[in-house]
Length: 307
Length: 281
Image (tube, rainbow over all chains, first blue to last red; front, side, top):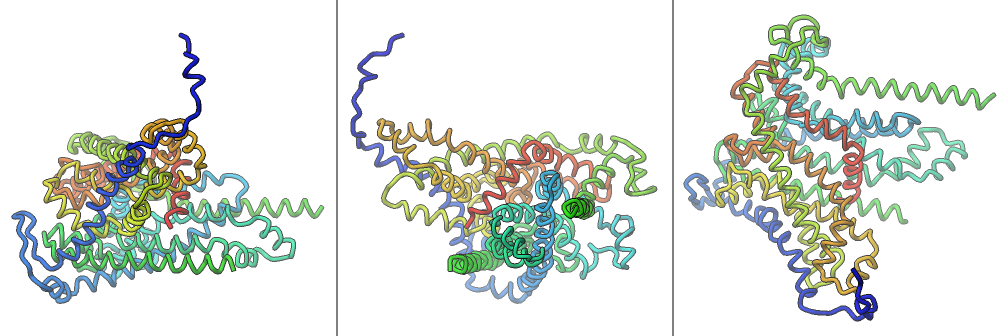
């Protein structure tokens, strides 16, 4: 097979500016924007709309009810209760998993050998299907026969956690920590490798101790990661569902019912779309607030960093 | 002499760190061991003796799960759902991310802005309105309800866009000067080059959708389209009240595929998570 000399010697020409290159970008972007509109932007708007209606999803009918859904939600006090529970869950999971995650990351980062191994061990719960592991934890927390009641619980005199209004939420929070610590470790390990080595060396030469090196060099340079981890674990607390649903079902007497579970119970379990949408608005507001806080903190850190 | 002492001290330090990490690892791994131990223990022996050691090995629990749970269908559903989401994301998100990062056109800024706005609306928060939409389309209880909301992934677009921006413009430019159409550039240059980024978001997408229990709980009311987590939990709650042996066998079978996958693709998964986190903001 011979190559025709004409094609080899084809002169370099200006690119053809035709119809296709002008339209192409829109063809490439349109499907994505369409899907985003239907499944992200429209639903956010629809959520507000639905709160003013009584929607019967099975019959396909809607009836305008004004602010009745809000009044009902306020009356029952469930939303307020779930806000309190969600806040408490956030307090019980975010600071502990950040502190433990950073400590473990620092420990792994200080190793000469076996870093990948320990990283994998601590990451295992992140990859495991949470709802299946919740079933395992439920079995561990079972009253009397479970391993918690037989060992740890008996030792400190706290038993039957899942049936206790005081201990059910901490039980779920323990699982929450167990599951996300590995995630925090990974993020901090990535940040720690980016800490300027020459600064650490300089501090060491100047005689700074381990704590002083951490506080004056490492901690400031992992600041953005700390903000990010704090926000992302808080947002995760807003949507905690798998553990609650399998371990406590929100109980006993709503003592562990977070906002995400309340939203499911109202909207899906009780077919109360209006009531569920009220919870949706609360969740949306909190998620947007978390993003705003993140933007603000990150911007401030970046300003401080470049000063 | 001093260096020798320093070496000894640092060795003790290293050993200390390993011991501390091992102590923490007991807490991390204990649930996995209890799950395996209980699942392989004869049903009538689960509460006898030490709860930590496996003395009466038996496969009865697994036999019962396989006999009573339509596990194969759940696995199949899971692969269909996760696979379709991934293919859809590649077909929709790669071209869009390329256009939004490397093509100049009126409205690009607006498009970018919409993608960023969508990233701020977590689908967990808007589950009810999406449920209403899906039920209007008649998609409740179908695979479509589990797939469609996740194909136009703003997060994937963002990840891919960062990736394309890191490739010199000259690479795309030279192909354009050779007279290649945007579509040819897409197929012959953009897709092959985006492979590392596609693998990264593919792994993240696979893990999160395979494990997902939240979304099926909203859009499925029977187990026709049930993926593994939803199908198993539904079955447990209806059939296996306090039969912990079969429960743990079912849990093991749910977790297993991902744990195997994790052992194979550990590096990519961890790198992907570390990478995506730096780019979310």
